[in-house]
Image 1: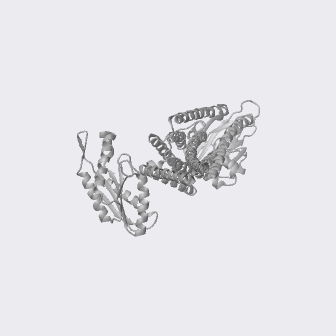
Image 2 (image 1 turned 180 degrees about the vertical axis):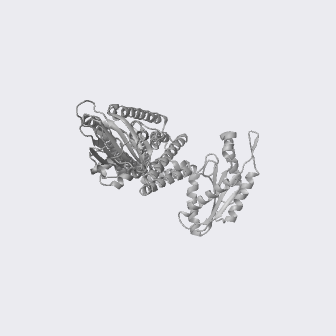
Image 3 (image 1 turned 90 degrees about the vertical axis):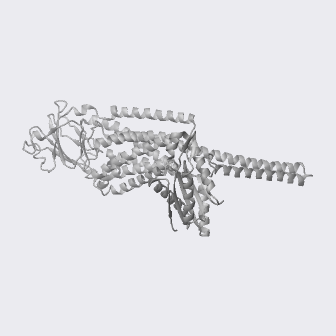
Length: 635
């Protein structure tokens, strides 16, 4: 059902959306200024360079030797953050840590990227090729192996008042990112506190949304709340995996899961987002094709959840990023298209996906090293995820509020009818009590009045039922009547074992007619064709319905495929030979039709027959139009 919202409500919701957008932009600025490490953490780092080692010849004992394999000319100078894109080669990084003062100070060295498979660190004193300390970390190792329990690789540098050389060996199946920082302990504690506060607020928000919506699902049985809960939880787990928080707190011993978590939960996030969108937006009412595409997308992401545990990580992550970009573009197009069709909440849906589109696109470019962001891409996803989650919650609240209002209105109407009936009964009892002597006459009189009223009400209801089944333009039955009639004739065919024929008719190039002659010309063509078809139907049992803009359907009970084809072909021929004159100009009309015939065998058979007729219609249009294609089927 399409939800209609008045203009004042739309303006109010637009204001809410504007406020949310302003808040989102403010949060982006806050992240850029407060959460990203200050440049002072990199002022202690100098001579940062890297070298690729695809054949894995270098070791910590030889990496600093000026040999042919690793001469200074082969080292590439760079700046932090380093982003080398996706590569399975071993990479060595070297830089010098210079203390801020002449006093011996112990620093912390952090790599602010949690998804590196293997990170080995060695620290060398001045003029020495032998490391004084070595560490090993990465998500290919159990979490408790890390030298410091932190969600990102963190290492303690030896106490020294002189510059020290740090060499890092990195190997990973995903993106090679090296956003490095050298902290004093106090600096890191302050930074971690502010970062943990921001992350705590974000994940707390997602948990609160998930908990509230799962309770709403249990109380209302509305699956939108269930899908939204799945989306919020999956999004939280995806971002927790990107930040290394899942490995630190949820599955520290599950090395295998850590390597697949981003793909598993990332695909689950989009799966639930697609299911939520299909359930919330009236996609099927406007386009069965787009609805079918969304079903395929949901299945695709569901399958990717399973295949991501088997496929190589580099291939699976690239596939996911491509599919993510495509589905977000499709979602934005669908939202804009439905908004153009008059679905008010679709515009908010488009804005919600816009944030994810921008951030997802930027992250994709950063992952393949087309661009190099100065901040962690997970921050962009966190902010975009927050904004999208809030806007989707707003959409869900709007939708549920209007559904609830419609329910209240229906209940109020039923209560009013009940009160009127109760009042009529009370009036009858009052008449009986006041005029006891004339009880029989007055009771009969009042009963007669009630019967007349009920009869009139029944007639009015029947007339309303008839009107709701009539297409106002052509005067023939509409889609609602067609659905009921199809089910009824299907049962009749099944009961009597007689053939039932369904024809779906579409006016060829109707959009061109509308574009050239306007809606008035198009309406005249619809009425003209309706009259021709009605004149060709000789049996009272044959039923013509308008089921779409320029689409008609014929229900032909007890008619075999030859008879049905003869009727529909005669209609096609008559229409082709009967142009309509509009504004002094003759309009040549043709139709395409799809026909299907069968003896109905079960409850779903009639619907399958309609789908087959529809498929034949599409085949007729694709093969040149102005023809009738049919296909009899057996039960």
